[in-house]
Amino acid sequence: MKLLTGIFTTAAGLGASGLYAAEAVRTPFGTTPDGVAVEAITLTAANGVSARVITFGATLQSLLTPDRTGHAADIVLGYDDLATYVAKPRFLGATAGRYANRIAGAKFTLDGKPYTLAANNGPNSLHGGTKGFDKVVWAVKDVKSGPVASVTLTYTSRDGEEGYPGTLNVSLTYSLDEKSTLTTTYEATTDKPTVVNLTNHSYFNLGGAPLTRNVLDHRLTINADAYTPVDATLIPTGEIRNVAGTAFDFRQATAVGARIRDAGDPQIALARGYDHNFVLRGGVTATPKLAARVEDPLSGRVLEFYTTEPGVQLYTGNGFDGGSTVGKGQQAYRQSDGLALEPQKFPDSPNHPAFPSARLDPGQTYRQTSYWRFSALGR
Image (cartoon, rainbow, N blue to C red; front, side, top):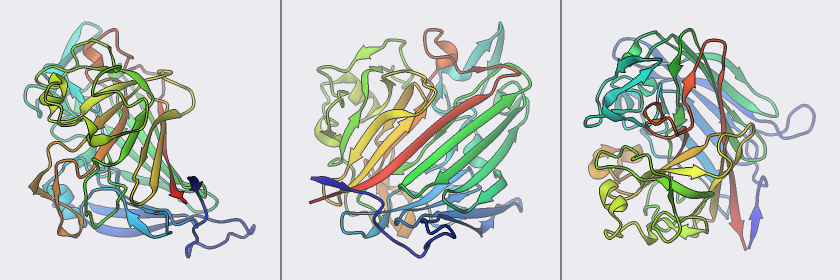
């Protein structure tokens, strides 16, 4: 088998230098119920990859990549219209924050002062609370075309918003280059000590839309020797557990569904599948490291995922029930119709001193860079 990359051509065409160029185009994407206009920014490269980002939730709404025959299809779950994103938020492609993932008991203590958050996931706070970063309209700061197409979005989270201390100024840049790489770059500053953990929450199905099968036959590799087990409310217990001999061993390419029905593993039973943080080799890094690889044997599509973060949450869409979430093309999303790979600090880090710190102080800058690289297996 060999990899075919960057050989697909589209109307993005050639730049003035004769090199392939990438294009960024802004279009309207509706208006929120309170009258705020939402835009879509479509980044298109000349190799057949195209990403559409909407300003509501800084969301990756669509991502087209070619299969082994050159046919491009949308490989992320989502909705066709803004009204559904507003009415039925399920973090489909959205930016989660101020603190992605769960915080136990919806509370933490910083410098001896307790903070209470919204309990929107049983007793816990999830993905920033009742109105996290996924449910606000971000501002467009910059849009660029050229060898790399990009859009930079910004949002200011005020002191006390959802219970978090400090005014947080956040920027996020999505960029698409000619090598089939889509990058997210986050930066944030604060005027008071706070905690920050941002992530993109895209669900991938490399078979592409319209969906004809779930992701259980996708072959997954995660560069992690350990994971963080959880309690009954999916909060880490504090243990760092070796993956060897468990259903969480993805050190070699393994079908996502190979062990997902293993009710003998209490961790699989608790989450009804995978909803766990993997401890990546290398921890926090200055430049993105290879964290995971996903292959779809049927379409040939391949996703390689790189991040500077110490952890990645694998979630297999266990909450999709085949009726309550109706996505693109009026398709009802079912359990395991998509998988998420969420780069992050560990869940509940503010309450676990031994975990990588999510603290951000005035004068510091939070930075996170992650990227997806797309290719196709060829014969």
